[in-house]
Image 1 (cartoon, rainbow, N blue to C red):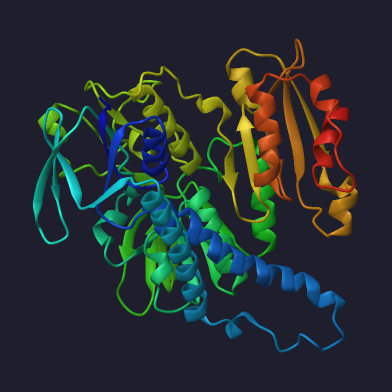
Image 2 (cartoon, rainbow, N blue to C red):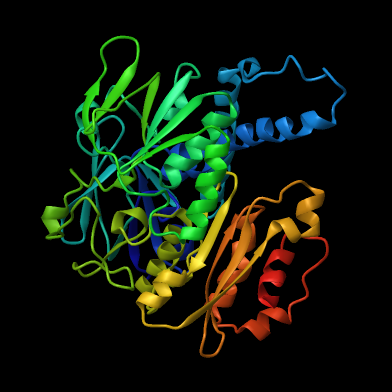
Length: 455
């Protein structure tokens, strides 16, 4: 008799789990309270990339101007962009992908239940449907993949309804003339890049002393320099004392007395779990703003209940969620596969792009390792010069003892694509000589990796 499994949430953690469970012969149902595909597809990864693509086209056109006849582009400005068309394109992208995913589930004959699931006892959930109808379902195992919500740290949380966040920014009624972004992590930087490209004045407020917390200093320095050259202003190490929404502008007052005003304030300070109403107390499962604790096999403290993706707080990345979902499915069906966070690529899809994997120099040294770093800049790469994409570098981190690849950091070019080559190197513990034996096509941006290997 096949196992009966309930998957709660259809985002990048939930839907791969359901597909893998079906493949392994489970009787699987997936419950979704909102839009199929979760935050990533509907309010995160995909719509933000549609916005970024618009910004990148404008950015690329600025570079093209020098090849036009004199005066040809004199009349072009970001004011010519149609905000409603930008939003409509984003919505169309989301709808196409959501429809494709729903068709896949229909083809696989996986039951999709619309409603909000809450644990009502051991091995049982109660599902509240769109019209308030109730149904109870029993299960042999359950996967919690409910995701997270935008985090509003104090004092911003007191003004949640009046401020924008990474979920609601896609539906702003008009393009703002200026925006203050709270948070210089991945979310904040990607929106800063987009708004700057379409002619919006952008300032970024960050409590920490630098952007992209935990990244290699060489990376943060390069990204910060690039953003500042484009007119994006940063305020680091600044704590907000007060928020003022009176009048036509929205403003924050910092503890040092500085006042920052903008048409919109976008709070992009990360995400937090919100599992209220999901009945976790009914099964004795504790949680906090970071989510539910799990072991390396995605098991919670409650037998038969697994948690994957953002809701377990291990790695708030869509591709981490997908891998965790697959592993949870396999473990439910008798496997014993652990999640390895050390090989998860971390990506920033602004420009310059950032892709990193494994350990950076400081992280490796903190583990007591002696390291060597090798770096090559795109300024010396033929393809980069030919395409005017010379911003950035490839940096490799090796164990000094045997030259095993420990990690890599890429800035510029197609960093979020190239990082997978190095993720494989970290996973397989390849040495410098192994990576040098790969033939890197010419001319390509990947030759920056080859040049770094020769240093």
